[in-house]
Image 1 (spheres, rainbow, N blue to C red):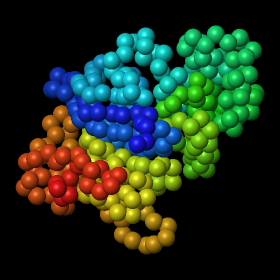
Image 2: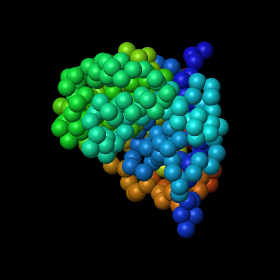
Image 3: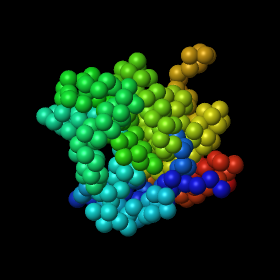
Image 4: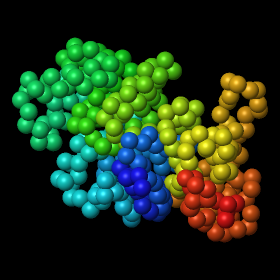
Length: 319
C-alpha cells in the first residue's frame, strides 16, 4: 500500500456571519501520496484556497475549522498547539502563495527574508552557511546569486514567484502547497514557473498540491485531480482518466468548456450560478445546474465513494 504524505478527513471550515455560517469547505476528504503531484480545480469561491490555508492552519476569525482531521504523515495538525504548528510550517509543509508581491516584504532584501524563515525554525547555522544555502536554493529555481541582495520591487513577476518557491523549499518540506502559483503571470512566464516547480518537487521528492482554475495547465502537471464545487469534492481521478472520461456532471461540463486546439467544437457553458454557501440547496449541491438531476438529487446528498478503481465521485448516477 502506498504511503500517504497528507490525508484530509471530513474537513469543515465555516466563516461565521450575522446571517449564519458560510460553509466554504463542507466535509471534504482528500488523500495525497508521497511524491505525488495532486491538483485541485474548481470555480472561484468553491473552497480551494480556504482548503489550502486550512492545511497550514492559517484560517483566521471569522473563519473556523468546525470538524475534521488533517493528517501529515500520520500527525493530526489540528491537534497541535500554536507553537508546535509554527515549527511544522515550512519545515514539513509549506505554502507558495497566490500573490508573490503581497507576500514579500517590499522594504527587506530577499536574502534577509529567506534567512528569517530559516532562523525562525531554530536552524542555528552560521550566517555565512545560511547565505550559501539560500543562494543554492535561488540557483535551484533559476535565479542568479545577485537576487540575494535585491528588493522585491527590483524583480519581475516571474522572478518574485520563483523567490516564493525558493522560500517554500528552503527547509525541504515533505508537502508543498501551491495556491494558483501562475495566476498573475503571462503565458510564457507561466511555463517557466511551472517547469521550475516540477523540477524542484522531483529533486526534493516532496508531494505537491497545486490549486488553480486552469484545467489545461493542471492536465499537464498533475498525477491526480480533485474537482471541487461549492465547498465539496465532486470527483477525484487520475488526470488522464478525468479528461478522457469525466464522471461527475459538473466535471463533464467543465471539460466541455475547455477549448481544444485539435478539434473544432462548440463550447458548452454551465447554466445558472454557483449557490450561496449561506443557504446551500438541499440534496446534491449541484442539482440546480445539473442536466441529469432527478428527484432523488433534489432531496438526498450523494455519498462520496469509489465507483471505479482509483476513481472517487459524489453522484447518484453511479449508485
